[in-house]
Image (cartoon, helix red, strand yellow):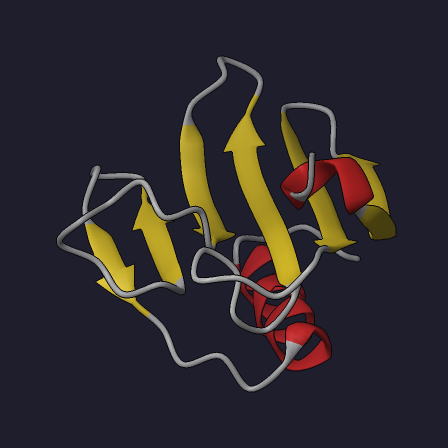
Amino acid sequence: MGGDDEAQQVINVTKDFGDHYAEISAFRVPTSDRYPEGIKYSMQYGNAAGETIIRYDNFPDHPDAAHHHKHRADGSVEDVDFDGLQALFQRFKSEVIEHGHDW
């Protein structure tokens, strides 16, 4: 069986800000239609109540969104450009900092 069985974690970061948190995970996976870049990732920033404030991911579960997308607190989903995992990680960290949490 292929797919996620062959995943290798490349980022695993959790930040506890008290009333907020950030969780970032990324895996190298075999290239496929689901993950054409060979990367599967989720970058979640939320509050202690479990509510999402920001989440970037490339899970193909939103047929009306681009492969790479951002979830917002209001439930909307926005397409994002993917210029590599490191660039997206930096963008995510900048947005967390804009919300008042030092990285």
